[in-house]
Image 1 (cartoon, chains in turn blue, purple):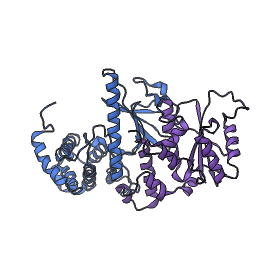
Image 2 (tube, rainbow over the protein chains, first blue to last red):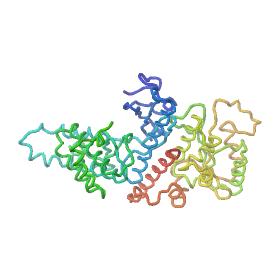
Image 3 (cartoon, helix red, strand yellow):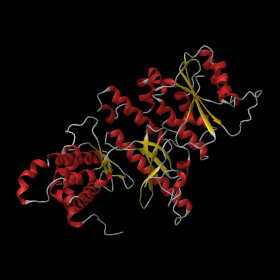
Image 4 (cartoon, rainbow over the protein chains, first blue to last red):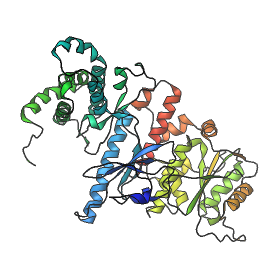
Length: 268
Length: 207
């Protein structure tokens, strides 16, 4: 999907800011329903960044559209700032232009947690009854990663925010500044800090209900993305429980949410 | 010439960003520059910044980028791009606060950063005009009014020598008692994290 020049955009016109001269050409990374995500640079090549662009929606009234776009960028930036101050690992915000519909945030090095877990699991023999005993020790690095996930999500909830779309694709595994596991070892694949990304659906909330729904969404996403590690998900919840004061209440609520599903109101 | 031309990524073409860093600025020079600035003398349209409130190039240039982008999108909150650079250094839209904290202070600012954004398109530069319109004229003009000051390369290393962390950076950007910072023991890592938070505070200024 690399774009060699700003003019070389096939499908989408670039946001105006990305048509200006830059040391590295912008690359379209993903596109979602709401917007597009480009990799580019902030100030100079030493500061790689992500530009999240929410283009104007032609089907919405222009004034309403501008207001919604501004509100969403504002909400996302505020959650990121609050997390950063509290020490929850999230990308820094570098610059915003709510009127133009974009926000520049820090580029996080590494691979999505989803990919790291799947690569780790892929190296193992297919589910094999005889290997069950051996698996327990094999899984130690993965379990450690799951515990870091639980602690990070707990850290986020402890700041009074919920993510709204917790999946292992919305977490990056940023390599530790000093690596611990041996080069080429399986443990190396799942080593790193868990950094939460994509706060597009995040909201300020300290309710047990919202926290439980966050966990439930993660649990369901985890089971479908990593079916072979499903039974290990409990380690996420165990670490979560120890990560902030109200975690126990959220976990109790999770039981209710599991019984009834994500939607409480049955509306919408 | 110690005037540096800065090439910033993703800035609209048609303008040059020039910066200079002066140390040992005399009290009379800072008085004169502030007076001309407040009189809105067009010949003295610069962003004059007190270097003790600046951490690094990335800190300064983030403000320049934000201001230049505001100018390019017709969303300046202040009369021109130079005043916008000063207010862009702040975490809120309080203009007089921003000038007091990041701007030049008569008789007090002895470490001075100057930023000039020069249009490149309109220059059939008239040598008799009092308004500098080329990098050479800007440099000559600055040197004339900053006699005795030491032109210094604008590097992170030089900037870090004058940064006032306790009384300025930590206070102006409300970094005291921030859990993420208190958790870091290593002083170098802590300062890097403070720079990150400062740039973030500036990015959220208008939200």
